[in-house]
Length: 433
Image 1 (cartoon, rainbow, N blue to C red):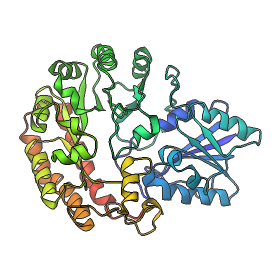
Image 2 (tube, one colour):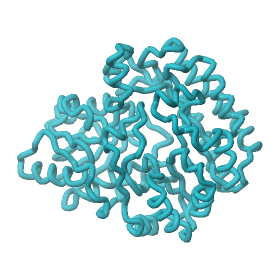
Image 3 (cartoon, rainbow, N blue to C red):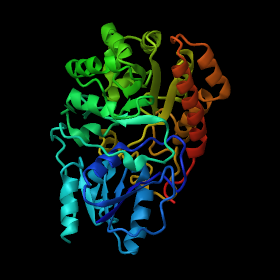
Image 4 (cartoon, rainbow, N blue to C red):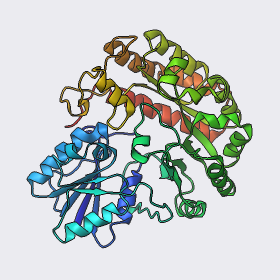
């Protein structure tokens, strides 16, 4: 069969911060014997017509409206459309209004069954992946990414799932409390087959699943002399030897969800443990002293947030000299405890906001307790603009407690310039075409 794999963008425009989509590489490796084409809506236009047997779309909540528009177009042309990803997993019946079949959960196994059924003309409506399957067999075909304008970052995965169940996150709903990791040797083999001059990014939702798992990975990485980044929970900073091991293994950036300066908010979102490593400022300093840059993320809109919270948070981010930061309005997505709670409290401005033709990126989605919806939306946008102002970028690069490296300084500068451009480009955009 001829198969077109499509990764939709939020709208019909191109982005400058796109990274190669690992999920597409996984599907490609499990599509042996079929003729594949890949279109990434973030970096290239999707053709108006596709001469294929199946169009497969990987769908997130923010890209759902665009994905459905593309799907409807191709179904009108007589193409069979299938969907997978987080959004169709949580809302399969919604997705099936625009698709012939949906993969719920992980693609492995379910994707092969779908292709076999499609080849024999017996396509089912729903295919369910096994979210607890062993990850020992993990082929990835990255050949489809060649020639596309991605950021110079290589994505790799060690494990799936997260040991925490944060209120705003849907990871726990997708995987449960079970965390699976790949054999360390398999990760090593994959890394050695890739472009070793690039920055590697571990896409794990939390690289710190257990101390045993993390130490095994770090011991393998240390002699490879690679430079890499990851998402990791702040509790790793309780152990100075663990931070030392991260640095010695080549870690150059960590993304940490600081989320809030307000202890009551942290408790409400289920992240009261965020304070176990001490003050945020000290955590940043300890990582900087080891040559590790910090990408801090914050979320506003919990019940103890006010406009003053936003101002104090941006002050902290600047004073702590965070290398990169994001300041997001609290976003209730399907599958999260937050969405169910706000829906039950009748605080959602538009329950199905991702399909609302009037919704624009950055718009308020619900009614917060301590500020108006417009104050929430505007406060987040202003925080981003202030952090990525030219004066802020220059000040954080020149006045930092981080151990200097030309690579780190270059990557931080490039990341800030791209983030500055994307903040303005995405704000206020309609979802979909």
